[in-house]
Length: 255
Ligand SMILES: [Zn+2]
Ligand SMILES: [Zn+2]
Image 1 (cartoon, rainbow, N blue to C red):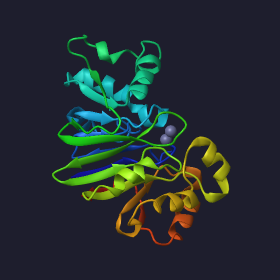
Image 2: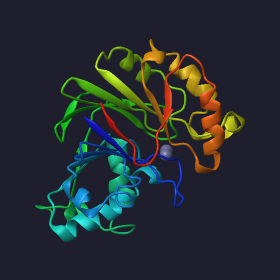
Image 3: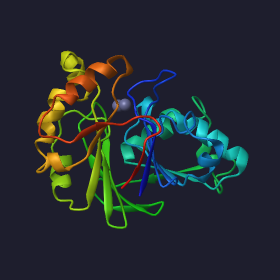
Image 4: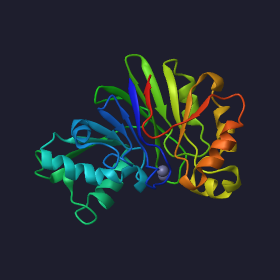
């Protein structure tokens, strides 16, 4: 499984992009930079997008990719998430007010996007991958995803603060090769991190201890706020007993 980092930050500047990760050029995780970070040819090839939650930094480029794909006559793009997430997209995003309803364009029979509901914890086949959504702890309904193919699995935490169920499930996965893990704020911003449902390096360290072998699990950090990039990296570098790396735009990993 090839993983490509298209966007990995908790904010946007010309040097930082909001979250999108691409698996084998077919399946995207989150839509923060689907169009700002991908050429048209790659946008056209995409089969499905897993949406962790409905916050704008994770869904924004669904608007522009739908528009780009309809021009090219692409097959429907599957937008995959839990029911609460998809309900927000239907009601507040592709609602013919904020943006056209691409689930009925060019026609209801041949739409540009189709919604696909994931039942929490139930494995589903999406674009040739196995996908399981696990609820995590953010300010709204948010899922982590465990994606597997050919006996290899990668996990994506979604936006979350301290949480329990994800670690229970990960502890049972012998096929897990890497965890993409959010950390957003430095320790000094703990109050805002707690209020907004995000990790600081100190809460990340405590949560990683819920995993049986944190030292053996490559933990790839993302969603750092651009304003705090250096400070968060400095604090994470000091954490002991873990196996952390910070993801960068353009990184490619073979899992
Ligand atoms: Zn969020
Ligand atoms: Zn976010």
